Image (cartoon, rainbow, N blue to C red; front, side, top):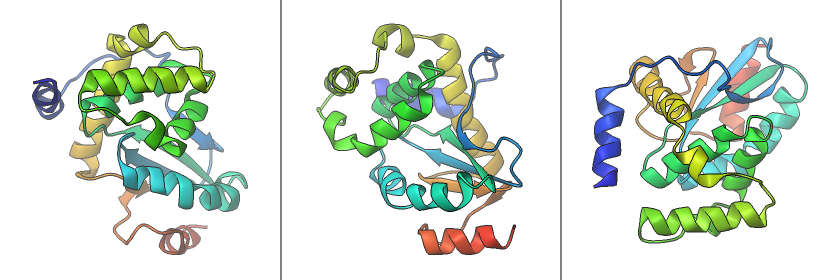
Length: 191
């Protein structure tokens, strides 16, 4: 039932005034020439693979050097990912750290046959990792919920995102097979 409700909400669309304090999770130079958006779902194994196998080299070569900025956009594919996105977005000063931890350790918390079981695994994981989070307050925060849902709606409407991860480079959808070699070729053309 919750999955159906999330699908209805996501496809009807929500237009809201999101709290100005809700900020994008990003890494890199805010004024970089290259802006990379990545639409991803925290329960997506391909997204976790991107964070483990592509993002470290991308960060080293383009983000840490100031050539690029990467913004992590929410595109939850299920209620568990939706709740995890709200958790990552909830701690303004730790959003990137939480996001990276959730992807790096996806198998440790994406467990259970119900949303409640996955939420319990997520709570245990966050506590073990030392993140001080009021879980209920974060997942029930309407402004953060709208922020996450609006990312998904914008991704679908503006860029025709229909799978995760989806990369957008300077407002153009990256259409090649997602590996570092192909990504580097595209980025080098923009430098």
